[in-house]
Length: 141
Image (cartoon, rainbow, N blue to C red; front, top):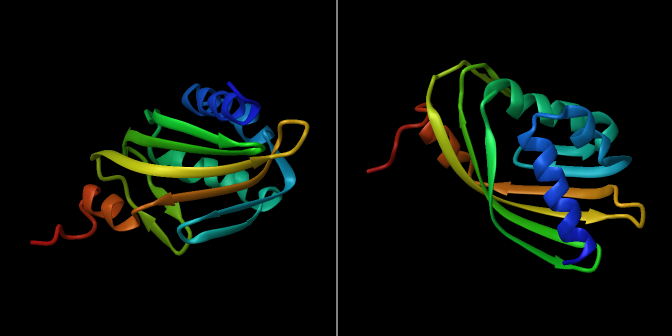
């Protein structure tokens, strides 16, 4: 098992334990974060990213499907599970609590420095699928 794998496993444990200090603290202040509708530095976005998901889905859990690594780069393939009982204050829109449970597949690409802190965090997920599961976007067909 390599270092990137171990760091992704630890970050996932911190997320699932709802330990904001550990999860947010794993980022270097100059780390770059990117995902659907969000990009910038960790100094500006790590707390915001945490709040978007943890406030909207307080019972959430990440289920790991696979972890892959190449040197200082780790890739997490996982599913996000949670019930939206709070507002989701996403960039550009707030989605009021729907009470719906979601299962959202995602891929996360992280790069780490020599000290084990995140330098790049890029999240990929299907935003339309999330909105469909929340009942905000009609299901096609």
